Length: 471
Image 1 (tube, helix red, strand yellow):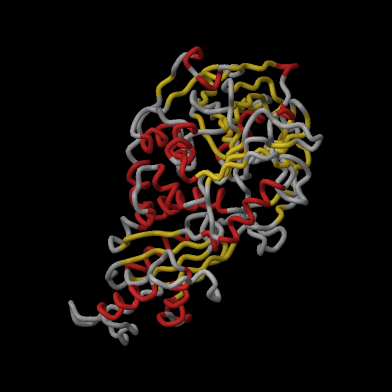
Image 2: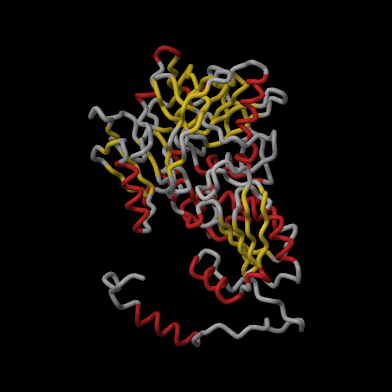
């Protein structure tokens, strides 16, 4: 069975266990920030989260679950993270339908808290940044459904816990969940919603698959699992809103018609504080959980949140460009570029192939800059990408700039009030040789003989380099 606990057992050697009390207000995020700065990405398990009043939560917290590309890939059964895009694309395109089990068999409904007994403030919800207005759910997977087709949708969306039974609920304006919510509101009906927290990374990343509307994520989860995802009817909404039976916590409720409240500012994935916005709210009717639940948190703006979504983007971009450019080998969406940049590696592309693929990838809403390189460039090294840009690009010849495209309105560089963005595609591949099967018309890269390189590695292996200067 796949769940959060089975994954933690698999990765027990990569867990940083903290047994002393840690404050929920910024201290856990500060630990993530320090680890990020050192390039260390262990899973963090906080045994004793501490509330502002000094009380210790009975519910432990896990974060940094997907901060490492290696750990995240391994969770999906992928040995080399550099091959993630192709394998993820293939798996999510081989969906497996979910199964519905009884409530008696669902671990997430071992404990059920109804109506007046609901208290969100008893959950160990983090306040991550000093300008955040309060504690936010950051790993809550919001599940709604289209009232016209009854097809569900799931997406990670932030929720500010305001009272014991009320929180803001901010579905991004272009999201499928927002479309579902607006359809209910247009009918004069409150929108049913359930937020589930804590599961195996295969399920977490299945729900981030980029699908058409309306289309359920549950089958994509099954594709990654290699088996049917176990679902259970929610307590409040029944079979209209199904939730993963093996999750840790579920929060159920309604978004009342046209009721908006201030949400934010909030520290976003961009690394900047997002502005305060009017947002729907959720009036909570029920909370279900395991008898001894684990609370999962994503560090907003840190590798913990960026890595899994960026890797899913790699799969989406691969599925877009591979049919157009058969020469494509790998795709990388680097943490350094947040979610705005993508690097694509090709092997001997034909004339015009890269430019065709650039036009296709620029249409993907999340991208802002796309760089295509040859297969001698390591797309997982920002330094090598800069080398390719410096030595293989003439800006007037090798770039495509397009204005008026859809993009992320969370981009802090966008002019206030703008509805579209400008994007750039860069062909940093070498010009193909005019004579088949001959080297490209460019000087060879500097190199040393393999034997010299092996001897150098042997010498360096016996030296303590811990105190050497860093670049």
